[in-house]
Image (cartoon, rainbow, N blue to C red):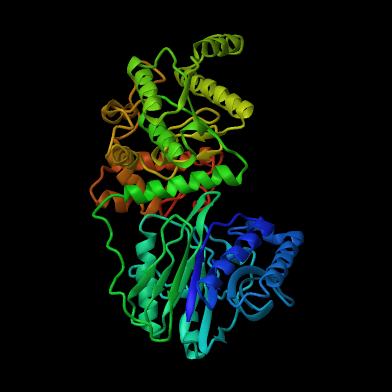
Length: 552
């Protein structure tokens, strides 16, 4: 049997455009001689549609789209396995996360997702009812088990907790399936591709059935989907891989007992992040966020620092230099080298840069406040007035130019509150909000591997917010190598202070960082959406109360 894997980028709610795309893919798959076109999870509504799934008009639009797809592919020989939000009668929410197989204009099989994740960024039990039986159907003499994403994750990767009591893949094979299909929308995080490969090869070896796995690609809000669809042989070898972070129609011949392709799951890079992979993810996430929210251009502040430099470089990768505007906003505390490096960066990237000094607005704000603060504003207030003066200017440009304002702060700053509400936190998307400061430096060096994009001085000079004389980040924070190590323990690994101290960090420093993380929750709740590239990102996968007294 020849199967075409249609790894493509969907937009939530774009039913007509999605049907057009599927029809085009079905025609291409037919021309390639495929018997079946496999598409991602929730293809028709787009994923994740979230609380749109609670709206009857949205669900009904999906039902009409499925009928339209069936009608428009009636004359094609290829079967189509498409992800869909399928209403049902009886108890529950009235909706299944479903996979529907169409052929010749009619439904030949329907699977209901059985394992509904409600951890990390997932909340599927809020919208869907679980299925209760395997779906096995016959196509061209081959018995196929139809599964959806989490259904193949019943056996966790080594070291992970088992979350489910049933094994839908095994049950499908026990019901007669010779080949397993899986429609997936598995979000990206560093190392996730290798985790999937290990899990799917183990599942194929455990069940003795080849697996054809189609994963979504593209960015939807904070989530980035990396594609990298797979075909796994019955003995657990990787037969074929689709591209990462790009659309692709991958056509593969599959049969019961399929083997070959001597590949094994890819090895993890030695230490640190995979810089090229993270850059690809952030580029895709930014490009889709801009395009799917109706923007075409982006604007950001250029301080001469490392974070704004890396953000600008990613914006150029995603949108093109002609669609990125950099804005330098020097104050009395801005070093001459910062202005020079901002201009040099803009020249290297080929983007336009505007210079808007904030001195007059900074002074005006203090004069206005003088009546209410006869003793003068505090040092912290004066620092924040500078950041907020810049935020006002950037938002004005965003409004007038119709350009998305990108915030440039990193995860380390967001974790400990080293950022100003309505100042440097102003904007529509935090490109580096899930990238620790030490990782930002790694990305900068990677961007410079072939030619100088980011001025070397930007990389080697001590980081500073430049809101007062001779200020550096380390006046207020531990060195970033130490801070980031502690933050990985607190945020990603969810370790206690005691556990982190036991690994060798100073207890007073760890407790101070933990207190900063806890006390900064109110800021993060007001932050721009963060592109998720790590196992635990602030935002959708981080649900901590603001009002609480537990000291972790």
